[in-house]
Length: 377
Image: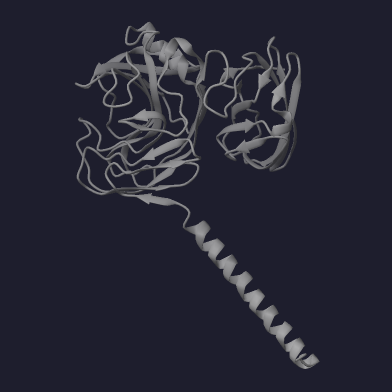
């Protein structure tokens, strides 16, 4: 029986109201899902993966008290850090994010372990967020071993201390200073009873930085703590807290290992190791745009590119074009898109972004293409 016009309109009205309710419910569920997207880990050695290629681990081993981390797609934050240990001994934990293999837990798609002699570059980037009411170091670890081991303790540990708060110090004793990857460091050397430890301590806190892991691996070789036929097994970034630590966070992490002069990890760039960057800006009060041109000055093409640089403090990217750029501040990586991934020898590629800033405006001090430093035009 055909419904009357009144009933048809009423049916359409009910359907519209139902559809509106379903849309509202979907929006609420989406919001709830986004709000609950972070993963909380409180298990002693609990871990998860992010971005389909890195492992984040809670890694509490020096205390029986509770430690919890909240893991997002870009990094992690320590949300609970109970207990304390004496600052003249070992720390209570090392929550961290890593590329490679740690006690048989290998990150997805990693090409580590890799022999040092086969690695052309190992570009990496890290951004930290610090707190003051704790005793800790912010450490980037590089693990080396004579064998391609994926379990247990490696022979040599290189530690890069980006920050330290409280009366804590590296293993061993200070043995001098060195300039590595363009920065000045206080160097410590010693053994913790399980492995040799070579530490590079920053004179003041570094909140974010892009660099090449191989610059530090070569330091270990030159000091007799590794050999070129040894293996890089993993790189890790996190915190070693002795007291408290809640609020400490790794806000971004990236790691690529390029072997054989070609591409490195699956899906990551390789190719040319010579480049020039032009960084043109238009600046107004509180805002700016940047047009970046990358020139391949090598004789071979670049097949996929990542340009690393560090935005000066107070600057934040609000939008970008012709490249994927992340994170929005600190140690930033601009990645090629499908249509501009290749740069022919002598060729160029350009991208840009808009941002905000506070204080006086300055430009980034350096750039690296697929982990290798570029000259600036």
